[in-house]
Image (cartoon, rainbow, N blue to C red; front, side, top):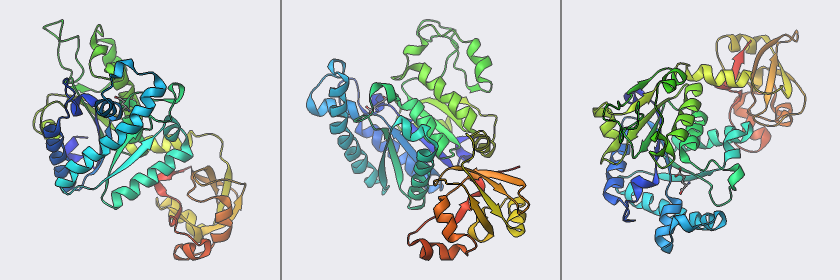
Length: 368
Ligand code: GLU
């Protein structure tokens, strides 16, 4: 899918785009970037920004050199710099009347199903409120063993969680080359990658990995995650002003195309999840609705078996106990016991708090 047709877009920006080699903040660039985001928003696209820069901005404020920092020191610096980073975004984005929010994620938040489902809800709600989430790794608490350490892979997980159509990695390189362009004059920019494994075999990686702050390795890892999630990924040189506009106007970047559909990828993930934690027995009306690709509502549920939490993997059975679907449940088994058989607009009153109206959303369900 082209960037133009994408509905949900994740843009990752590296520290080198925000701060130049003289440790000066590239305000003019950020201003032009915000203008590009404004254009995307005007076209009704949902946008998430994954931004590095907490440590870089923390170092500027404290006049420290990043190279001399130990892990625990860099965590304190990230804590100082993250506020600087968000202040910078807030100042510049508000000039374009763009609302921003902050999401700090750890590796576990994205790897564990329940937590990633929760994160998805938060992203969805922020989209509905017309806010642009700005994501970074929660550097202040993540230790080296449970750390992404690079925002390339974090951004690809965010793309997966939000069901994004395209992830744009704005880097300080033009894209993926056949050879190191600094050494070989015949190095070619690979504009389109359709079969990642095949394409990678033909690349001479000598020196290529040094490009970009996270190197090419983490970008390729990110591309692999995107390909499995039904999300296309672009690597483009973000050092230019109006970097998104540039992608829309010139094809001087690498795009990794995903062959699987987004829905297919998500459903495959659901069906391949670990053993289901419980069962919902539904009536004929609900079964018919499921066959017509509708969500499962409380009104059609007759019985709950097992103890499960919100976000758990469950089986859906018809009244003769035949399995008809599997899915991720938006309610716990205790909650469902209270609301089964009831109309969706009664749920809030029964439970005493606001929830989703679908017990299993159609996007979280696979028919069997
Ligand atoms: N999370 C780090 C920061 O904000 C950056 C990680 C990266 O550059 O990929 O400084």
